[in-house]
Amino acid sequence: MHTNRLTVLEKVGFGAGDMAVNVMIAALFYFMSFFYTDIFGLKPTHMGILFLVARFVDAFTDPLMGVLTDRVKTRWGHFKHWFLFLSVPYGLSVILLFTTPDFSYNMKLVWAYLTYLLATLLFTGVAIPYISLIGVLTADPKERLSANGYRMFFAKIANVAIVWSVPKLAEMWGGGDIAKGYQLAMILISVVAIGLFLFCFATTTERLDHKVDKKPFGEQLGYLLKNDQWLLLCAACVLGTLGYAIRGSVAMYYAKYYLEYDDPGLFLSAGIAASIVSMVASTWITKRYCKVKLFRWSQIAVLFLSALMFFVVQPSPDAAGIAMAFLLYVVLCFVVDLHAPVFWSSIAEAVDYGEIKDGSRVSGLSFGGISFCQKAGGGLAGLIGGLLLTFFNYEPNVAQSAYTLMGLALMLTIIPGLFHALLGVVLFKYKISDGYYTTMMAEKKLPE
Image 1 (cartoon, one colour):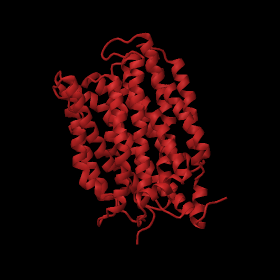
Image 2 (cartoon, one colour):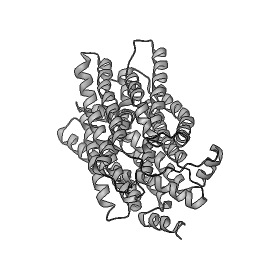
Image 3 (tube, helix red, strand yellow):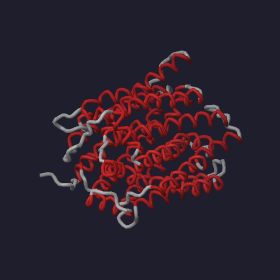
Image 4 (cartoon, one colour):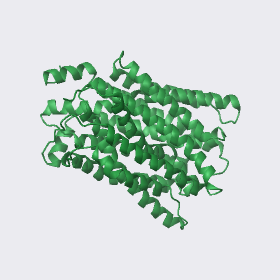
């Protein structure tokens, strides 16, 4: 008989799956914008529109993938077999995404649309089953939180490795052709991602029966829209991703042009390393402090830290200024990610809440909707980022004006900080703490 306790190997395997997922997330959040403008050669506004168009496509594919995971069951369960079937196509799509053909500008724009849409479609195919998997690994909220702590820890390890190594490998392997170097570097990263997905498939077990609601899609959606706690998580996901993605996408520009630092990848990696420590700290803190309160107040604190960094760090290659920028960026990234394990463990609990509240369980569509919100936030961030780069008169590979440098600083600090603070305010309406959830599941009714 299976228990709700997960072995360390299974938690590591679960975390390995997120390392593979984060090949795409790291690319989109940290250097996709930089690659498109400074290497591939897209105009910032065209890039932003591409990101937004892709999210319109996701509006259809994400919910459909959620429904598909509900309806397709193999001997392994509902979710993890998708890693086996789609890991290789996913890896190939990432390689194509970072391939720069020798085309005219218009044809390169077409290529960017085709490869970006293909990559995001296959990302949907593996990401939605992955984020749904935690709901059938264990019913214990503490074990879910612990597994998500592993997951986020390994995800950040992947982010550090990718963000730090890809620019260096691209420069080393490109032989003067930086675009070719990026393609070769992403071939290596994609092969590793395929192996990680297969390891996740081999080491995890869907030990809980996944309850599938046979109601039509429209009826499921109606029930889902009545789940107030799930809707709050959707809002949190969009707002948090907006802040996270805008900050992440501009960090390489900030390090290269604002700080005049010759290793932008190291600057990004330092922030991600702080996020790794944050994953561990979050798991420790939530054993002693309410996870919902941590979720709220950490995000509100981000705005104040962002304002501090904006006013303290000035554009200069001075060593002391760079050290201060590193320090404040590390602290900022640490506080930002304190909420992450809490958020990802809360989705399954919101599904249970909806079932008890309205008598109908909507699982696949719930996770598909969250995945869409994450990508919608990323797409809107891409559009906003592209428009802001244009508004602040950014030109690739040249010295930037004081106005542009101020804009890059705002995009790294105060602008994303506002989104995080709004997220914290929204979460004052969220109520599924560990105590609330335990009482709810024991009594099969919502606590007063």
